[in-house]
Length: 413
Image (cartoon, rainbow, N blue to C red; front, side, top):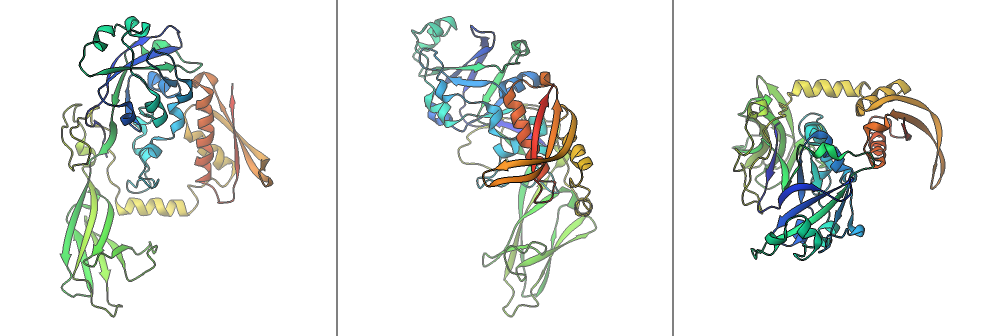
């Protein structure tokens, strides 16, 4: 599935970065016509080299007052905002399903260090520059601020991490406001009358390789149906069976055990993708979305279309399921834990495991101490290492028996 980044609606217009008075700071000036409160929760797409983007993620972002002074109470570090999958999760916090066992962190791994979400505390405290301030004069904005165009200029001070290097920004830096990730995932709807039949087959017309997942199945009465292996609706009668027949996917509905008559019709909503065939579109070429969305008046893709992942067939999914059920995808021994931890981040040089004791609010408990060795020069800030520690702990918990406890220690050398 290709990943696109689109700019939505009226956005902030970044002005080229200039160096501050300190070698560890950057000043970014943003031209904005609305209220800064409207920028709360805005997603910013970072342009620049990979090294520059990583430094920005672990920098301290300060809003400034009218005279360019840093407002310390509203500072934030983008790297602490969570993974890209958490940024673009659904409203109820659930992770998005992309077919098979793929997650958002896997599909959008190339964009993991490109997004920043502007907190409400930052946006509400941000003040427009005063045209008479020394900062406006030093940045050459005095004439622009006094132009009477209704536009305001806002200054953000970015304090680079302790091991940052301002030379990484020599090739330039750009910020696109109001960006999000879009994929070539389209939802289609298929309707069919049952004609009173108690056994109904429902064939999807698209090839099975292009089908991502079944989004929703409902009858004429509005009752939803789930696949037979998922009994969360509490009713076997309202379920269907999936079958792969040739290059098509079939849904089977069996109403023979019910006393009431079958529903008049069934509606299936499913998602399809063009996969790798949608690659190769240059930036700025996409001007419309397949579906309209409230609040988006115009859009364009700010990056080339790339990174497509084809849909997985049922055979591939069944192979993955059986492999994981046999324990091959679980951390059961020290060797498993060591191997899995090494795969989490390429900056990990070695891993050691030993038994330990962990203190909690309710006493002490046994745990596995995982020592992760890294090179300090590979990290721009201690915050980045702390975040790595938290993510490794969650990563190992997902791949271990439910009662396994971990204490991850990052050892920088």
